[in-house]
Length: 443
Image (cartoon, rainbow, N blue to C red; front, side):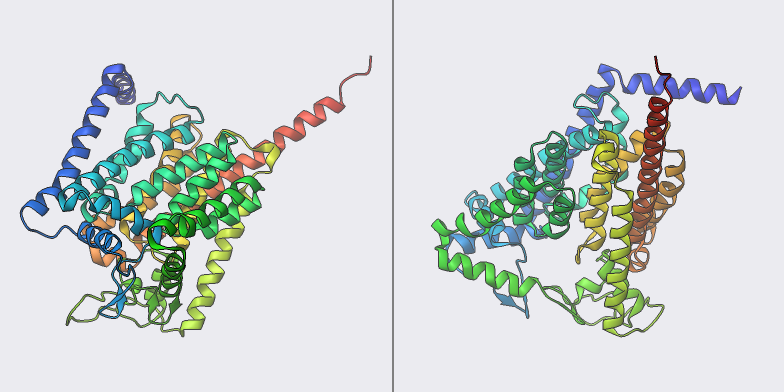
């Protein structure tokens, strides 16, 4: 009786949510939420409170307009860490003034969030007209804290997510040149193209790989030349590369202390915290160090472990990928979700707001549960969600031990097993079809 009541209640809720009125209500909730998220940094500015990275973006834009250096040391590190093309785009935004820049960036974030929701649902659902409201609601609801962080801190990771999801959609539509260009734009905002290039080459997306490289070269060198001069554009890129593409015992790039602190949830950050005797807090000013390490290994040994884990993840990813002839929209959704998780875990700096990228993995998981194919995947997803939720109650403690990284790792393993199972069933179906064709009676 109780089961019948629950099924009836679920059916009623599902019918109402997926009705035209339900979709309008969801859209209204999204608009209100985006307005509230956008208003907070703007109100902070009006009240003279900290506006986080919005101030840095404005100052960087003004430096570019004044013809000043973009990358210069302050307190021993760069303030601005993103590629030169990103600084060039901020120059135009800074012409609007501090108020205009904040309003523009939060508006861009809102559009990117909407596009990400839509694209994640399309990729997970396997069709351009997704009519299941749960695919739009659940991923954003689960990740609302990370989404809020992008607004609060002024970070562009929702924009990066929209660009990457757009690239995946373009690949599925066989528009390789567009896909490569979109990934290049994301890389020009915040560099992480290595894994993407490896994936494109492995999958023989030659046009996409070439498009990525050509577009990236244009964005980093040709586009800035009319504004900075070619020689200075090259010097900007060189200074950025020297300052950012480095990793040693002290830390990563221009965040030597913060890169090993509890805020960094990448494989590099978590491994160094847990396997070396280093301060996991790294707060500015005098403070009591916090150590969470289980061992005190040497830096080269930790690096060997990091490389080993990264290779293991890569091998599992490659093993799970179905051959070209067996690929479908369903398998591609899982494959793209795994690629997103690989980028999240292996990027040297992965702070909390970056994990809004989990939107695609959670959309894929939601879709598989809705069609009754994700029961096994659920057993990996629930512990992952529990790990991610720990940060709500033990913000620093949970993240110091890598709760977000390990949650993402569980999602990766679960999706990889699910894709392997899908691949195995595809081969069995193909073998059965071949057997049936060979056993037909001869007339």
